Length: 202
Length: 273
Image (cartoon, rainbow over all chains, first blue to last red; front, side, top):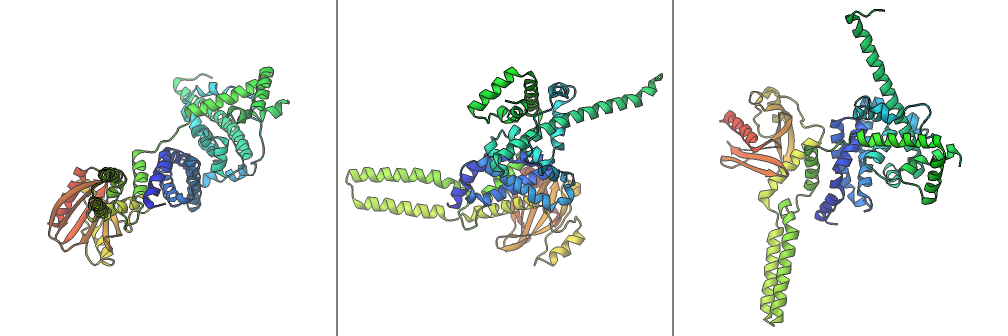
């Protein structure tokens, strides 16, 4: 492959996925600046290793590189990524297969969500998830990858994709409920501090 | 099928990952079991909430430009310049097919071999001319390339200082010439530091300015040429302004407008005049 051809083929395979690369990097790092660095670095790496691309699924291939770039970056910046330390604990439970959702215990999340800014709550909840849960949600729901594509990207068996997704969705539900509970508590706390000004009678 | 066992299939069921017989089993059970169907609906609602509300972050124009630019600039100096390289396929497929048609026409009319030979020679000569690297275009490419590399790198400057008293001796120890290090903060161009770079087979000075968050690299090295007025051009979405003054070649490159870059050039020229 001449370099001219290589550039052209690379443009066709990879340059249409810049948004996907950035979106994944943004959800992994949770900030714009690092996400930009990682997306750029991932493209440089992707170009360098383009000869190893098997020609099948450009997006899954590129997203794998974004992920690897992120892990290398995180190792170098380990002092900054403290908040992710608890995810090892959830890695250990890869093959557990939690039930879908505890339907009996709670209200419909959709009804809970309309109370306040839904986007704010969902984004916050997703950011709070452990890394391996967060990424599987991003790949499935935002990138709409199939189980097989996710398995390729994460380099895990399809069964693991299934169990991680099940766990991630139930964790997300828990987080949404918790955020709603926190905001209700804050609202009540705010009322309690404000009311004496209006001469609250007890 | 027991409820607990069936609920394990809900995720692949809503993701469309089950085979037809299993889908049918789940369908049947959901119709029959109110508890499971409520759990399933909750799951669907959660998915819908994620899809509707989770942010899909899109790459900004600047990141897109940088990625596209760095891919196009990844090429070795010995190759034809990007402009020729882009012209090559389209131009030459056209030329070759025209020539082939001409040769076919003439040979059908059984006009002589010399015409054919001439065509081949002309084509050969033209190809040679085309493939020769365009020296004039090469330097701007190299400069934009260096600029993009500096943006991608985590460190734009080797020495961070806006102070001539610090910068001058730093460059003096590393270069055989002395670039001007003028802070133009009052004029809107903040000097943030200096860097060594390698262009045109030599070490050059790079002075790094910022303006409203945009990085400007000002490259400088001595040339044995007369003063030349300011020239502007664009490559891959970056603007370049260059000039020659008192035996020194200058080139400023950035993604800010040509007019703003020309202002910077004017300020530096005034400072040296």
